[in-house]
Image 1 (spheres, rainbow, N blue to C red):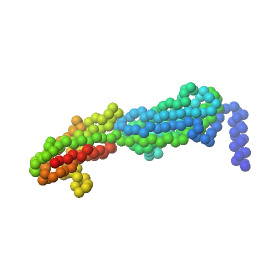
Image 2: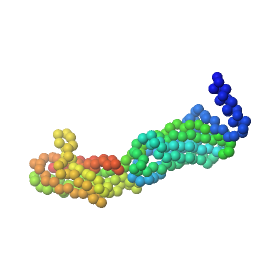
Image 3: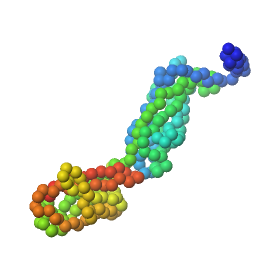
Image 4: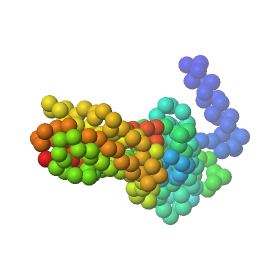
Length: 241
């Protein structure tokens, strides 16, 4: 009871002084929302968009969103302060993320919306529901071709690997990527000895291996190995004989 009387006394004093007061509202989602957009976190700095909507009572001329972006490791990755036009109920904003500082994974948008008849009037605020989105590694694409599909026993076969890396404009040659050859054996894929190499600036590399099977069907594939910058990928199977 004493605590309640103290709280009412402080609130009354503030109101009597005539200063602006921010009155918290318990309900969250009825007054607005934010939506993150999952995507690719490229090896650079970039702007990553989010959507918002505002639906506050009273038709106030002042509305604002205070947002924090929480990284997968719990740290604060970025903030955003959005003041929508009074005639607009929704729009877009953007957070700035950079690799390798910001990690891959699920991000959380937390924040509040506040509103008032004018920017100088007492403001009402409400928490927004958390929004989540995921930023993943860029993908890679792998292909392999053989100099012959019907080699003789002991013949040297040239296998040409090609690796592509996902970029904002599309897929481009993945230079200096480790790629290796695998063979299907007894229902599982195993590495082929001597079949590992690093791509050149063109995203391609050729390895030469002696064919030591006796004219029976052999399934092969190439694998771009994962790195801190991009994800693993596997080529379509290649059949010899």
